[in-house]
Image (cartoon, rainbow, N blue to C red; front, top):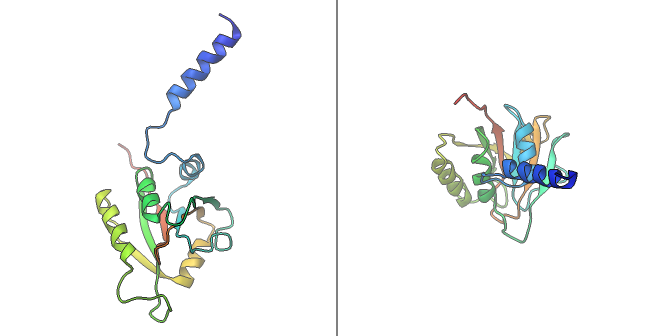
Length: 167
């Protein structure tokens, strides 16, 4: 057998053995999630979030904005929940005096609650007031920001990674 044939077989086997069977496919996001530990923070940011300036000192920024509204924070949340255990889900809380505040929770929060329920999670959304939310994101525990093109107001989620328990 020639060396070239051996290389081709090796490459084929390597690809066959490593082909992903997961919902989450983005290589950079997968890498960051794999390297995250308990209490690491993952921000799924909406299209209005200042991701370039409000980021942790060692966090990676993955920009997924394809076009306005695609993808949404909800779509990314589903993908992350399929692969990573989450202990805490913080939303960017709304001060009543904020010019974009509305009566009650933003409609997108109900969508997040349904996604959590569908994923079998018992976790609740825990709001953090906007300026404290920014401070939480800028912590040393922040490992990843996924910037979406979501146009929903108050759609930012700060996830705290949980632990993988023995099967």
